[in-house]
Image (cartoon, rainbow, N blue to C red; front, side, top):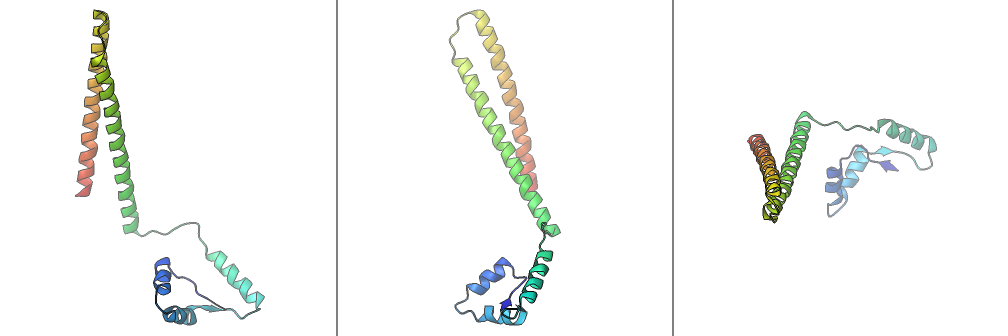
Length: 142
């Protein structure tokens, strides 16, 4: 039996997508490890070698790591942006409810006015945060 090792997923896909298995057969014959049928010792040695080569870590090139970090930052910014937008929408809904409320007395009106001002300030601050996140996102795209 021949066993082919060190084949990437893309290479294996390429070899198996061929109309004939000629390239795959040639690769197995030239690069495969031969273990005679019934040779338990050779099979055990191969399994031990393969187990020793297995790694729990993945080596990523510098470019790949930079790309991954950039992608993670973009996702984080997008999620921050979405969270800010949701919070602004909630505050605007609260503000509309306060403004549409019926006035019972002047003290209730003054309390609602304070709440409305506080909510407008929060919306303003969140708007500034949103602008900063969007600016940082656009600068990173450049």
